[in-house]
Every structure is written in structure tokens, then in C-alpha cells.
Image (cartoon, rainbow, N blue to C red; front, side, top):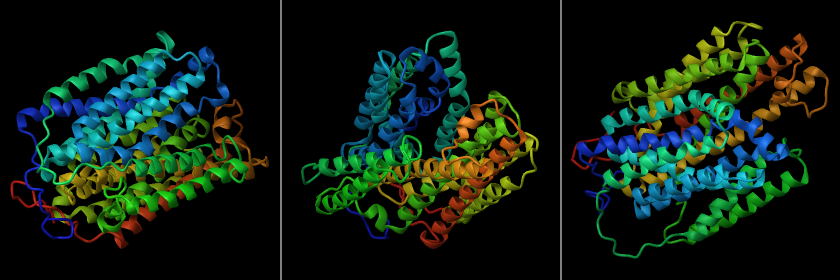
Length: 509
């Protein structure tokens, strides 16, 4: 059956999961690949002083993170479509090789410009890792067992969020910052060996038409995303929001978006097909998880600053306050199938995001200055709620499409979440800096991170930071409300789940 209830020709047999004996090594490979992508987002941060001290380039070091984020985000839709066209295995192998090549080049970088360029190469491989791993995870298991593999992948992200900064600091402090990139090589080599040896993709029905890759559409998606994300990442940081560079980038992104849409409409097999937005279920999940990316910025970016500046904690203790949600999120996700098998994907996600909305709204009402356990407890509850929200939507939307569309669907969801994070970082950064400027009576260039790193811990500064972070959490609550509205208005009451290849009905409702 297709997502609209009609029979889909030529799809029988392609989506059957590999034999159980092959799942273990493949799952281990997926977890290694996910660890590579997850660690790379956190392990570099603590080594920045050593990197800058060795290579220079203090004024542009932020592009170590921005360049990687840009490359990952804009390649997600491209890799998703390629995995549906050529299969998951070649895309994952190529992405892993590209990521490891970028890691090796980063370790050999001779100046900051070279390191930034090689981080972009890493990101080009990282886009394949993130999207394809999630797609293969859905291919491996039938609907009732998918929360198990998704929970394992969530636990990898959670562990990386905690371990990444610690490992990065240890390597930079006691070895050399180049080892931060070299440690990827043995992990990636092990993942590659397991993938090549054990991942056996089922053969699909023979194609009656030759494969046509929409390279023009891929270039359009890449260029549009690069301009838009550069404007969002650098606006208000490298230049003011209403300055010529910001306006030029945003205008260029709008023009390229229009051109890309025109190209995609004429393409025989578009890189970003229109059905991704025409189908209610996929469109609703895209909007909801885009809002998730936006609201996640509040705790991940601003809570450590709050913990240090307002609560007076050290960096390590502040990290433990944030890590509370990495404990409850995978546990909640692992048990979410016991909920959605009874009440359905949509209602489970509605309950999860409603709880998250309550947690985010509660944060601004914490006492000043308060105790560390108070935000930690809220983060613990928030992680539990988001586990009930995110995983049912991911499992649900992957179950509404056949094998040949699963890569594109998964990539579109991850792409929206990544864009949401970029929008959230830009928007909430502007909100925080505006509140700080108003509270402290300074100009609008006041920066929250700069204040957090300064030695000025007067009560006025602490109260200003507290007010700024409170407003950010109100903004995150608005994003949660947007996700809730998308589910209530756009999503169907019952997800149109396809039948399993074995003939067992997938529908949990």
C-alpha cells in the first residue's frame, strides 16, 4: 500500500530486513558511524584555545563549527535522494570515506584557513553519515522493533554530548589537538569494515528506465542552503543583521530557492521532490521537527552560560546540569513504543511536546539565583518529554513510505531539524543580546558569551543574563507551541502506515 492507501507497484520484497544474524555487526557499524558524526560536533569546542594558539586565526575560528554545520545541513537532502536511487550502502561507504579523508586532512592542517576548508570536507561526509544511518536503522527492523535501534542511536548522541568536550580537552591538554581528528580513523575503519562485510541490501525490482540523477537540483539545493545558513550563522556576529552582507546573502538565497523550485518541477527525478511537502504526514513532521531543532538551542547553547554566570557553577558542573536531559531522552525514547502502540504516533508526540512546552515555560519562573538541582530537574523532565515527541515522529514518518522513498523522507526531516537549529541560534542570540543591552544600558553589540567569559560577575550582570536566558526560553516555548500546532492542524489523526513485507500490518493504532 502507498501512503495514500493505494497499492504501490513494484515494491514487494525490497524493504525486507536483513537476517537477524547480520543485524548485530551492522548495528555496531551504525553506532560507530553515528558516534563519528556526533562526537565531531562537540569534541572540537574545548580544543579551540590550543588550535588558535598553534595556527592563529582567532577572528575566523567560529567557521570551524559553522563550516561543518553548513556542509552537513545542505548535503542531507542530496544524500537522501542518492540513497534511494543507488542504495544505502554505497552512499554510507562514500560518506564515511569522505569523512575520514577530511579528518586526516584536518590533522595535517597548516593554518586556520586550511583547517576550516578540511572541516567542510568532513561535513560533506558527515551529511551522509547522519541521514543514511537513520534510514538504514529503519530498514533493518520492522515497526514494532524500531524504537530499540533508535534508542541506541539516541544514546550514542547523548554519550557524545557528555564525553565529547571531556575527550577533546584531554587530548588537547595532554597530547595534541591533532589527535582530536586522528581518533576518527580507527573508529571509521572499523565501521567501514563492518559495513562492507555485513550490510547486504535487498535487491529491488529491475528498473525499466535508466537512473537519472538530478545534479542541477542537487547544486541548487546545496547553493541555496549554503547562502541561507551562512546568513543565519554569521548575521549579528560577523556583521549586523541589516547590513549589506546579510541582505545580499538572504536575497541571493531567495533567488536561488525560486530557481531551484523551477528546476525541480521540470526534473524527471527531482533531488527534493514535491511530495515531501504535499503529503500531510511528512509535511507535519518536517515542521514539528524543524521546531524541535529551534527549541533545542535554548538548553544546549544558553543553559551552560546561565549555569556559570547566574548559578556560579564551574564549566564541568554546568555541563552536568545540561547533561541531565541526555539521560532521560534515550530512556523515554526506548519505551515510547509502549505508548504509541496503544494511542498512536500523533497523540504520543502531542503528549510529549505538551510536556516539553510546560517545562520550557517553567524555566523563566525559577527563583533567582536558585539552586543547580532546579534547572537540572527541569532538563531531566524535558528530555523525557522530547523522547516521547521525537522518536515516534521519526519512526512514524519512516513507516508511511516505501523503501524507495525512505532515504529522501528521512533526510528531509533531518534537514528541517538542522535548519531549525540554525534559525534558533540566530534568532535567540539576537533576543539574548537585545535583552542584555537593555538591562545593562549598553549598545546592541553586547554579547552573552563575551559576558559569560568575562570576570564581571556583579549582581547586575547576573540578573541581566538571567533575564536574557528567560526570554530565550520563552522563545523556545513558542517553538514548542508551533510544533504542537503543526501536529494538531497538519498531521492526520492516524499515520497512514504501510504493511510490512511479511504481510503483518504496521499500523499501531
